Image 1 (spheres, rainbow, N blue to C red):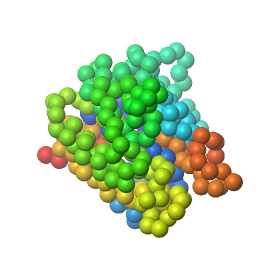
Image 2: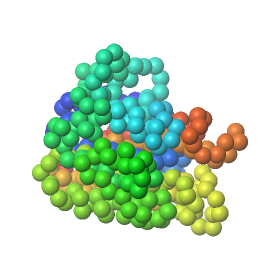
Image 3: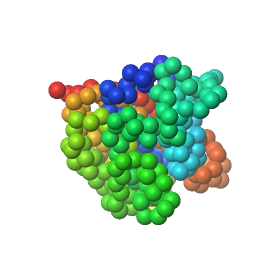
Image 4: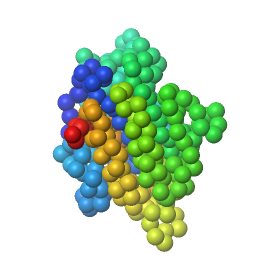
Length: 274
C-alpha cells in the first residue's frame, strides 16, 4: 500500500493547468494492484507516483452515488486518520476537509465552478448513468458544457476505450487555447467484461483483470494527446467503486463490502512534450 501524498495546492493548478479526471468504472483495488504486480498495466505503472496505486475508500457504492459525491468535491478518501484536505470543495460552512490548498467554488459542484472560471468542460460518458438516453442518464453529464455518449462508448462494445480515446483526441484538437477539464468514464471494466477473457462465460476477477489490461493499452494515446497540449495537465485517476464476485456470498455492487468500498486512486502531472 502506498502512502498518501502531500496535498496539491489546487489554487495554483486551477487556471494554469488542464485537468483530466479519469474514472475506471467498477475497478477493484486488489485487481488493480495485482495487474501492476504481474506487469499487465505497464503504461499506468509508468505514470503512477512510485509506480503504485494509493488505496482509498469511495464515498459511494455505485456509479451514481459516487459521482454525485465526486463532483461535489468528495473524491475517494485516503485511509488513516483525517481530516484529509480535499482538492475541490463547494463552499459551505463548517467543512473540516477544506484547507488552504483546496480550490473552493461558489457553485454546487466543481465542474460548474471551473466552467465559471473559464474552463472548457467535457464529459465523455461510458456506463448507463452517462448515456444521455433518459432523464437520469442526463443528470451527471448535464454538469458539463460538452457531453458525449454513443453505444460504441458503452459497456457492450469490446473496443469502447479505444473509441472513447479517439473521440477525445478529436475534441482536444479543437478550441486548443482554452484551459480544459476533461472527464472520462471508462466503461470497459464494468460488467459485462467477460468478452476480454477468451472462453469466459461469466464475469470474474480474471475477466476484470483482462479488461484492465485492455484499458491500459487503449489509454496510451490519451496520455500522449494530453502531453501535446500547451499546458501541463493534472490527472486524477481512480475507480468509483469495486464489485463483488462471490465474496461472502455477494455479487455486484450497490452494497457495502471491502471489495466494493476499496478503490485505487492516483494523482500525477503530465508536462507538455514540446
